[in-house]
Image 1 (tube, rainbow, N blue to C red):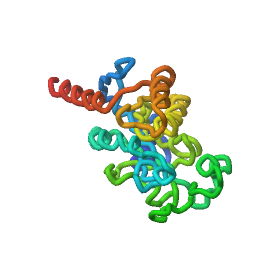
Image 2: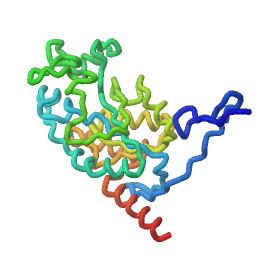
Image 3: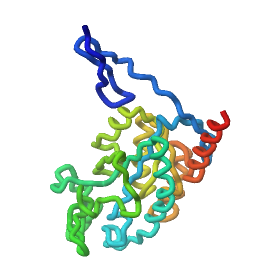
Image 4: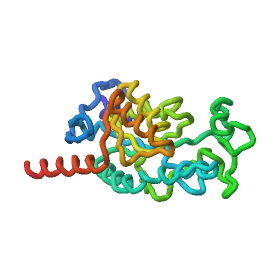
Length: 264
C-alpha cells in the first residue's frame, strides 16, 4: 500500500510524491482579481500572482549618515518613498502579497565585483568606495550584513518577507530573484525603491525582458538624479516596459475588491 502523497517544493510550483508516485500536475491556483487604475490603462490583475519588490531602501542610499550622503549627495529625495511605503507594505502583507527586499549587499571580499564597477563608485581610487568603512560609523559600504546595507529603520520588516542580495543595478543579475518568483508563481511585479532611474529601472527592465508584468508605484519610488532622469524613467516605463500607478490607486483597488466581495 502506498503512503500518502507529500508536498515537495514551494507552492504553487510543487509536486506531490510518495515512494511510487510523482504528481507533477501542480495544484491550480484560485484567483483574487482586483481592478487597478494606472496612468495609461485600467488593469485587471490577480493578487495571488503579484509580489512587490522594494529596491535599495538602505541606509547607504537613504540615511543622512550613509554612503551617498558622505560623498555629497542630497539624500532627501531618496527618503520620499518611506511614508507611502509605511502605508502600503502592511496592506500588501495582509493580502498575502510577498514583500521582497532587493538590497545591494556585496560579498566582503568583493570577488564578484569588477574593477570597472568599483571605478563607478570610487573613480580616483582613494575615496570611500564599495566595501570601505564609512568614517562616521565604520560600517562597510554596501556590504552584506553591515548597517550600511540594512533597510532604513523607518520601514518595518516582517518575518515572512523575502530578501535578495544584489550586486549590480539589476536585481536579476546573478541573483536567485527570478527562481524565487517563478517558484512562488508570481507574474505581476510592483516596483518601489531607489534610485528610480538606476536600480529600480534596471530591475524593472530585466523583469520585462523575462516576461513579468511590471508596474512602477510612482510615489513609492524616487531618485537623487536630476528631474529629467525621473521624467525619462516614467516615460520609458509607460511607453515600453509596463505601467505606472501609485499607492493610493493600489489601496483603492484593494478596498473596492473587498466591497465587491461583501456585496456578494
